[in-house]
Length: 198
Image (cartoon, rainbow, N blue to C red; front, side):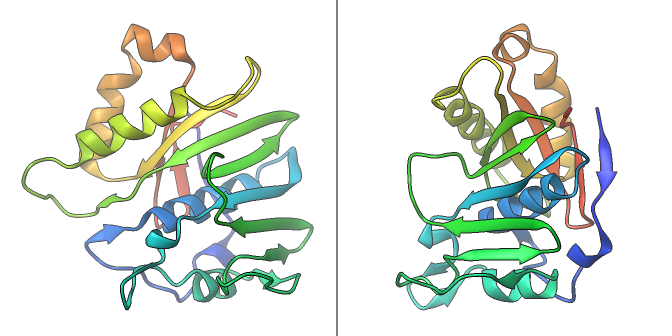
């Protein structure tokens, strides 16, 4: 398994909720991680469901603030109703945030291989009822249904917490999961991603 820290620019002054990591944060942190890997193809797509950003009048995740704090600048005009849905640039990397359905939450190419990830939110503190099991199960199930070819790397990405770590460690050894080729990536607020073999 590979654990690598991403560039310190991603460790911005932005702080998310202390008790949970929203799905949009998991997706953007994974996208940033991929954008800094050797062999990165230059562009990453991130699909964000509007409900991952705002529910009723409450903001769940500040995409624009997070990306600005991590050094990403808007590189195109906003054309839709979502102020965060546009193209961003940091150095030679571009990142498009959109809300189109039917795609992976994160899609990029590294070393000529397409990576398609399904991302899920998760608690950062222990919660009753172990919500980690259904969250990771859903991510794996959705990754299994991607319209992908044999060479693509399919990923189920969740926050890096002790509970998700225990589940991922046990499930990675299950024959059917190994046969599927789906990798479980644990995404941390520190900028590291564990379990993703590129």
